Length: 160
Image (cartoon, rainbow, N blue to C red; front, top):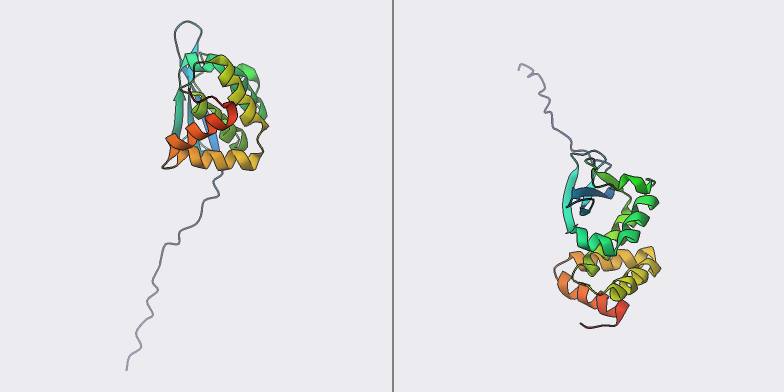
């Protein structure tokens, strides 16, 4: 008997990538000195990271919720001056601030009454981090339109 040389089978091992969930804001220039926003949920640190669009916001809506956008940017360690209509680079937002901002953007999108928008923003800002994650998962999921309406009614009490 002759001894056969041992064959070594090489397999490629898949490794988990330590990617953190975050959000990023892309400024979309509008007319004159106005801008809209695109909010994406990202997994990873670089610009080529896996991302999913959460929502896009018109310049008219930004005018109603500017303070919430500035709070998210400041909470992520950026100066408020990074939000300029001429900005081309994306702004990375930490996960907790991004979830809160996404909730504000999603729930105030169809509303035009300024008093109601202020009530909703104040209600979301008063929520704990756990509550914002709960409502974010509901407002992104399969029954998202119903969850958004429920949150609007809960926070502002107005059904219109």
